Image (cartoon, rainbow, N blue to C red):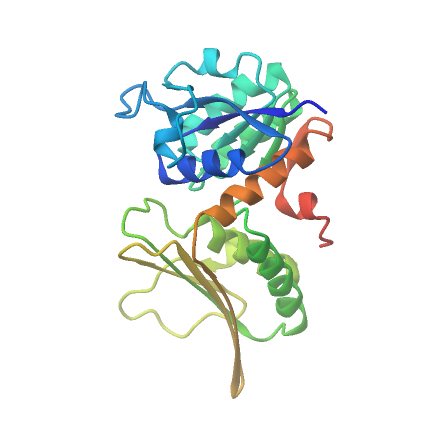
Length: 270
C-alpha cells in the first residue's frame, strides 16, 4: 500500500517538530513537505534538523500551494487564521486536514466546517491525546450522573501559550455540558475577580495558569456535599499529541468529506 503523503504546517514550532519525528516513526506515512510562515527563521532549513533527525532533504517552504501539490494529508498546529486559509486550500484538493489549532472564534469554526462540506476530510480537536479523549468520556458520564455537583476545570500550560482557556479545557467543558444537556457558552465562567457573589448553580468554571515549560495539565473538579472528585490528565511529552494527530489522519483517509472529532476517530459513544 502506498504511504500517505503528509504535509506538516507550522514546521518551525515545537508541535511541528514533534509531528515530523512521529511521521518518521509511523509505518504508512511519509513526509511530503514542511510549511511555515513567510518570515519564519527556519525557512529553507532541512526538516530533519528541526526534528532531531538525520537530514531528510526536505527544506521548509513558505509556499502553501507548492507544499500541498501532490499531497494526501495536512497536519496543522498553527494559528486560527492560518488554519482557515489552509482549510480553504485543502477543500478543492480533497485533502485530509488534521487541525490541532486552538483559540478559534465562532466565525473561524464556521469556516472550517464549510471546508469540510466543500471536500476536505477534516479532523479538528482541542487535544489529540488518547488519554485526554478518554478523560472527556469520563467527564461526560460523571457530569450526567452527578448533576447537582459543581464543576471547575483548571488547566496549566507553559508561559508561551497565547490562548486561554486551552483547547483541551474547552473540550472537557463541552463534554461536561453535553453530560448535562446544557449550552457551554451560556453556562461557563471564565474567570473571577472581586466581589462575585455566590457561585451560580449549574455553571462550569474555568481557571487558566501559565508558567515555565508545562506541556499541559488539566483537572476537572466535581464538588458536591462533603466530597469531591478530581479527574486529572498530565501531558509529559508533545509526542502524544503528534501520534494522535497521525492516527486521525490515517483514519480520515478512509472517510467521506466532512468535519470530524477525536470521538469519531476513536469510536467513542456520546
